[in-house]
Amino acid sequence: SYIDHDNCFMSIEKLAHAPFNIYVIKQKQGDFVFIPPEATHQVINLGGRSIKIAWNRIVPETTEISYTSALPNNRLFRKPEVYRIKAMTFFALRKVLQSIRKKPLSEDIIKKLMCLLRVGFSIFSSEWIDETILSEWKISRIKATKSEDSTPHTRTCNWCNADIWNRCYHCPKCEDDTDLCLECVSFGRGCIHNDKLQLTQHFSPKTVVKDLLCACSLVLVFQDQKVNEPSQNENN
Image (cartoon, rainbow, N blue to C red):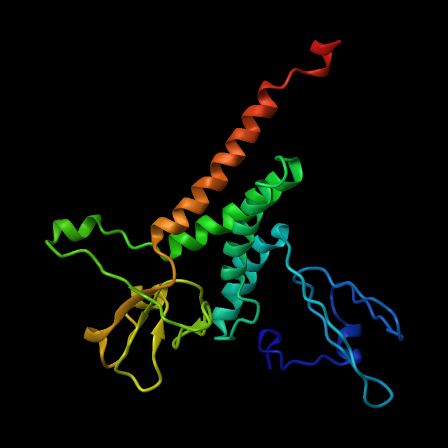
């Protein structure tokens, strides 16, 4: 059993000898229990059947933790993702950009943008294909077909179960509609129809870059405004 497989249960006796602090909470009706990001926890139902409501929340400030820590662990154990963190980050960035049209820039908005930008650039670079080497090898440019999924951003890699939010290699010949993330393809993973694999995407790289650069420009504008603001001593 492994914690990351969600099939591990630790007895109270074992936890009592743990070399770190253990907190036991007896939750009663109406109690709200907050569990911090990346806090390993387990639940024991007492007194027969019970019903719980869990609210899993990701805010801009915690997207980086989710992307750099939770996703690699999921991938290591081939555990399917639930929250679509990559798509969530991209659309959260777009939502913040749209909200700026209705209200002026603020410290809070810029803080959210910077958190989302760090993850956004990392996600984009993981799907970027450097085509400069193609001209040296006299290979034509890579053509990507637009995804026709009725529900976008729901594909997963058949090799590692990673979430595919935008680009992937799709095999139209495989009966199970094989999809491969770009990282698995870079490792040489594929299917028996490797010569038939097609690069598929929801958004073109230009569309993604446009949103990322727009967010960057807003951050720079806000920082310039802060630098050029007269200090309180100068006003006095």
